[in-house]
Image (tube, rainbow, N blue to C red; front, side, top):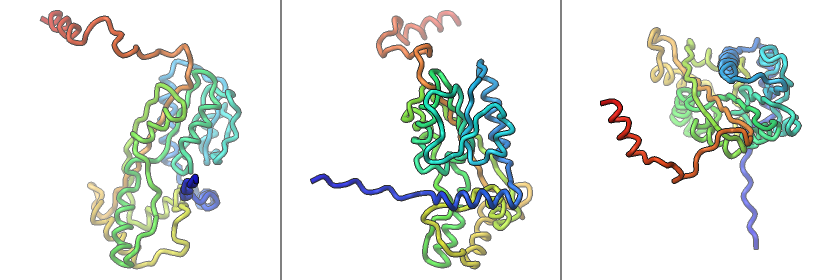
Length: 279
């Protein structure tokens, strides 16, 4: 008898995520990290010796990203992306991938939408993003209420995220990280900014009631003690890591690695030649 595989728990409450983004616009969206991400992507594209004529842009924040890439076709970051196979020579995934229920599936859909030798470039929060907040909330809740609820989105590590590129069918993969530190007055200021970024807690397993005030007060005290700003210890410093993922759709025109053992000169001989040249 075949035993069915256990269902994977749902990570993201998609409706809650969309509500949070709408609320962020009403609050006055804080787009600092979007602008940083866009600047970095523009710099990376400038280093590519190519003109892209059919770009697509996947993002949950089209009003921020769209004006910076006016030639791109805007695509919502839905679980099933509105992308046609082989329609684009460039697909950008703009600061939404960390909320994807299936990130490798998102990248694979982008890969299928690329023409031969087309470029995928994505950016998402990852690494140690909000690690200080996560630790403070976990310790405070354990001390005050004896429980532990999911409050900060799990963040992928750069090595794992880089591996998604290969799994999605891309070649020449590159993953790199931009480390940022943001300064806030206190936990309340940080929480308000996260809501205004559209990055509040939209996890499916989150508590469906307000967090107790004594838990928040304890978390604020722990955060202030563990992560003070070096220039102004009355404020707190929090990490935001942006991971950039780049890969190409396969093409016969791309450089191929040599087969193992096909080299005509050994490494030892090459090093000896260099040594003799230097002397």
